[in-house]
Length: 352
Image (tube, rainbow, N blue to C red):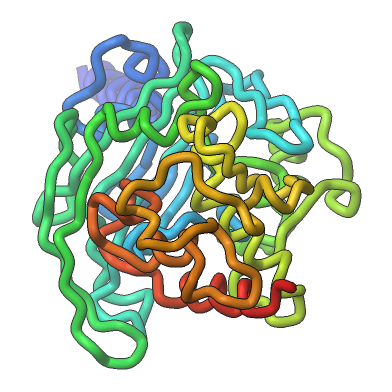
């Protein structure tokens, strides 16, 4: 009898172990459902949701020139089902297989002078590649930071922090609704990611156990195929890399913050203002270009970029505004990116 009981306990322990391991796997079935899960934890993308620890197969990544979103810190992860991989693209977003999930969490430390302490997560956005294409869902974190709840209609949240100078900052952070997501994530007629392009991934990232070039890491972990060695892949400079040319930094800044709309295949194609990093036509990227239709967004100025005169350039006027009828980008921020404005101002001053 004792032996039988012990054997039953042993079997129970084995069953519990395998159940725990199964629970640790990403929930592919939930990711493929047409209806999104109510809780972020339902997808099992994190082995420890409250600690924001990615599950096995979920790889963190970074962006060399990240898009500005009200100074939020961003934590990015990619999940590609086992046995599948993305296909390398030299200039556009990698071609991801069905089942891929791109995860981006927006957060604020209480004090930016201590960026790794007292971090409050605000939202986590998922881009999920399903059979019918990409789908976007936003999850807002609860007060105790134990999980995040689906918010299809978006949400406005008060957020405060102390910046690097010791000044207190306050904003009404906007979690976008689904239609607002589509407003930026559209290429041609298809919903698409913006960030994971070779030029933004091509730099050394600090993983928990090593520092390695991300393109190399993605290839080694089976998440990417067809990629060249990093020295043969495109790259952009970091925002504050003063060893890089001012022109490259400014063009890269416009590329990530504006070119998802301002390109020939984007929602702002009718503007004729194309701000992709590889654009070579000076007039097309704004040089002495008369706007098609700017309305009061022109600020009374006549060209998008007036060389040597940032104060007379429509482009700078719009990125330096928070007026909803003027500001660019139209969504994704409620405050001015002072450092970005300074970069563009200095760039336009040096143009001849």
